[in-house]
Structures are given as C-alpha cells and as structure tokens.
Length: 279
Image (cartoon, rainbow, N blue to C red; front, side, top):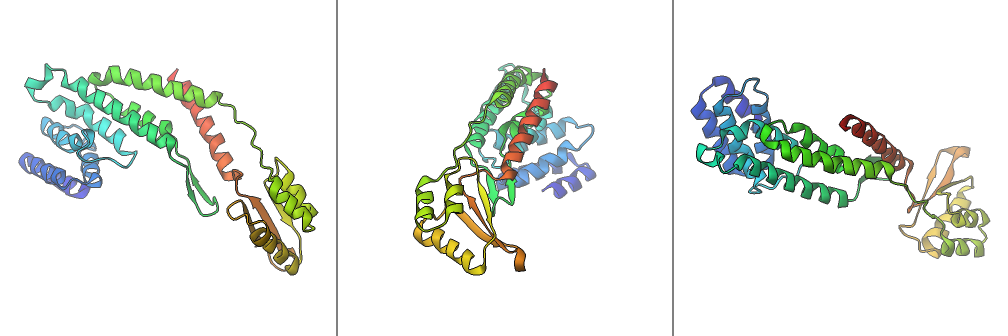
C-alpha cells in the first residue's frame, strides 16, 4: 500500500490518489492503512487533497471500524490528524468536530495503554530475549509528541498530565524484596542427602547455583528434581560446559532473570530523563 501510494503521489493525479485511498480503506486492513498513511505523511507540503486522503485512511482506525493492534499505529494516526482535521466538511467545523476527534483519540489511546500495562512481558526461550512493555514509552509519549494541531491542545495537555503522573509513579516505585525460598523442596533435598541444594533452596535471596558434579551426580540431581520433588515449572536444571568443566546449573523459575532486572532499571532511567524534559 505504501509503494502504491508513493507511485500515485509521484504521478500527482488527485482523483487517482483519492480513489486509491478509498480502495485501501475498503480492504479494512491495518497494515495497508498504516502504509498509505506513512506515504502521505512523507509529503513535505501536503495539499488539501492530501489532507482529505489522510482522513479517508485514518478515520476507520480512529473510529474502530478497523481495530489497530500495533501500538505504533496511534502516533501515526495523531500525526495524520494534524493535516486531516483541516479537511473536515465546513458544516461540521462549527460543531467542534475537530476537538471531538481528538477526544476520541485520547480516550482510545488511554484504553490501549491500560491493556498494555496489564499484559505480561514478552518472553522468548529461557529469557534469552526480553522485550519491555511500557505504555508510556511505546504509546502515550509518542502520541503526545505527534499531536501538533491547535485543535488538539486541550487533549495534549491532558495527555501530558497522565504521562507525568505515570512517570512520577514509576520513578518513586519501591521494589519489594522477593522471597525466593522453597522450604518444601528444601526438606526433600535434605532427606535425600543433598545439603548444598537444601541450603540453596532455603535461601530467600539466591536464585541460581552451579554444582560441580560427575555425570552420575548430575543425573542424581535431575532425578531428585524431576521425580522426587515433582517441581515442574519451579526449578530449571541444565548441564553446561564440556569435559572437566561441565557442571549442573539449577535455577529457581520464580526469580527474575538478570536481563529482566536490567530492563526494568533501564526503563526507570528513561522515565527520569523523560520527566525532566517534560517539566
């Protein structure tokens, strides 16, 4: 859709541009609407026809006829509205439709931010990949920055207040100290002659242990965890290394991995920097 709109814009036939936008709208796919919108937003000096075309493309997304699933769609809609609201029919401008459209944008973006906050973090494999899920960084602030038309000033001020409140709450949040002890499993380890594992499982702070064991020793620990503890999902255990350096690593699954902790710290730092700029 973006390439098609790029080609049509280069030809400069207004009627064909409007017609293509209508066809893309009728297909009802977010990715196509988004691609065409980005093509139009790249025009340096948009005309009234471009503004009308932008409206044709963003209204289905804004009004929920096509439900956006990509958080990056909303800042694009906000950018498109900067030009699109100027193309409202003259008989609707007096009814303050521009402000109503921005109100709709505000309400919908806040709903999406709430859903994002409730979502679980996106994980891949053994926490090898971790993508943060921050509604302020990924949705609210980009949308706020994209609102530049004067009709959106009131909404932009409201959005700014919401963002600052969220940033302040995040920065001042005190993380509770988690208790990673597993007394039930520790008792089983002790009864079966594994004092090192028992001590590890009783610790409220330790989350991982490396055991330098022979092959048969490692197998005994595997059987202990899988058969006697029945701790599926609570403990991860795998052998690492080769030859004499091969060892067994046991990790409490309830613990946040270092990657996740690092991501949270980075997010808090971004929030501090963002709040400083908005003051």
